[in-house]
Image (tube, rainbow, N blue to C red; front, side, top):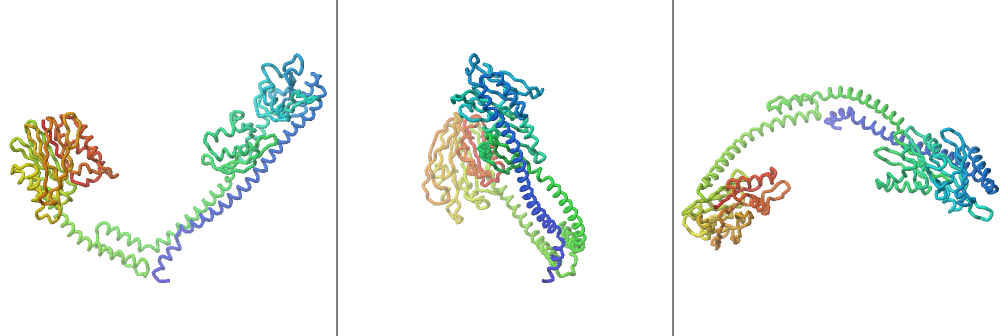
Length: 632
C-alpha cells in the first residue's frame, strides 16, 4: 500500500454511514423473516378458529335438521289431529334451544274450509314467552314463499336464504323446511324449523382472532347473513362493492365463496394490508374471516421501534466519537477551507497552509496552490479580453446608430397619406431596410431583407439603400430600377450576399401602384371592406445573385381607404420556444381584425404587440421590419 493512501484509509475507518447501513440491512432481513413467520402463524391460527366456528355452526344446523327429521313420522301419523299438530310444533321449539319457531304448513285446501292452514309456534325474542297460532292467511300467503315453494319443487329438505319474517317470528331468521308426502306420495306440505340470525350474528361477532378482525356469514346468493355493519345484513351482497369498483380479483373471490370454495387470500385495500380466510357450510353458506396485518405486526412494530431507538443511540455515540477523531485528522482541511474562502472573496495572494504528510492532503495543498496561480493568470487575460470586448461593443453601438440613421424617420404628414415604419434588428446591427420619398405627388417606397445577419448584412444593407436612392432618383420604371440595383449589388459581391426587395411607386391622386418584387414576402392589402389579402406578384429573383436578370413590374389600382403592410420574414417566421411560427395565416387574420380607420403608426404598434404576445418572450431569431401605408 502506498503512503498516499494512509489518509483515506484512516478516514474510511470512521465512516458512520457504513455501520448504519449494515445494521439497517440486518434489521430489514430480521423484519422480513419475522413477518413471514408471523403470517404463517396467523394463517394457521385463523384456520383453527374458522374450522372450530364452522363446526359449532354445523352442530347447530345438524341439531335443527335432526329435530325436524325426528318428528316427520309423527306429523304424518297425526295429520287429522289439528290440536296435536300444534303440540308437535311446540315440542320442537321447547326441546331445541337453537330453534325459535316451527311450523307445519299444508297445501292450500288440504283441510276443507281452511284455504290456509299452518300451525306455528315461536318464542318471543324480547319476552322469552312461547306462543302458538295459525300462521296462514290471505295477508300471509306462505305458499309463495321460498321456504315453502323450493322444498316442494326440489322434493328435498332446504335451508332458505335469510329473511325477515313478517307473518310469524317477526325477526331475521333462516328456515329449514322438509317436504311432507302422504302414503300415496302426494305432497301434503312442509314442516319447518327457524333459527335466529341474531344468535348467528352474536356468535360470528365474538370471533375475533385479533383486535380488529371481524367475521362475515354469507348466504348462497351472496347476501350478508352476519356482518359487523348491521346495515348490510339482508340489504347488501358481497358483490355490491366489487361490482361498483369492477375489481375482477374481488369478483372471482366472491364467486369462489358462493361455489363452496375454501381459500386464504392476502391483499391490500385502501392502503391497508389484509387477509381473508373463508370456508363453506353444509347448507351452502360461507363463513369468512377478515384480519388486518397491522394487528399481526403490532408486537413486531414495538420491537422495531426498540431496535431503532438502540440504533439511533448507538449511531449517535459512534458519530460523536468519530467526529472527534475526524476533526483531529482533518484539521488541515479546515485551514484549506479558510484559504479557499479568501480566494473566493478575491484575495488571490492568500497564503496556502503547509502540509508535512505525504498523502492526499499534500495533493490538495498543491492543487490549491496551482489553482491560485492559474486564477491570477486568468485574471490578467480576462482584463485584456474584457477591454477588447468593450471596445468591440462600443464600435457595434456606433455602427448601429449609423445604420439606423440611414433609415428615414421623418414620416410624411400630408393629407390623404399615412406612413409608418420600424426596424428591430436581431443583433446589434442587422440586414433589414426600408426607404421612401415623395416626388411629384408620387410616393416611392421599398422594403428589403439581406441574407445573413450581423456586420456583413448591415454593410450590404447600406449599399442596397444607397443604390435605391441613387437609381430611384433617375425616374425610371420599377423594373429598370430593380435591374440597375441588381447589377450594382452583383458587382464585387465576393461574399455572395443577396437581398430580397419589394419596391413600388404610388400615385397619390389616382391610387395606381406600380411595383416589382425581387423574391420578397408578399405584401398585405387591407381594403375598406376589412378582408385582408396578399398582393399577387411575379416571382422575380432576389437582387445580388445574377447580373442582367430581366425583372418585370406589375400595376394595380388600390381603393381609397386601403392599408398596405410591408414586412420581412422576421415577422412571419417569429418563433416561440415550441418552434411554432407566427405564419402568414395569422398575419392575414391580424390584418383583417384591424379597424379600417386605424392609423399607420397604430398598425405598426399593434402588429409588434401581436408578435410579442405570440413569441411569449422567446429570443428574436431574425430582424423584424414593418412598414404600413394608408392611402385615403
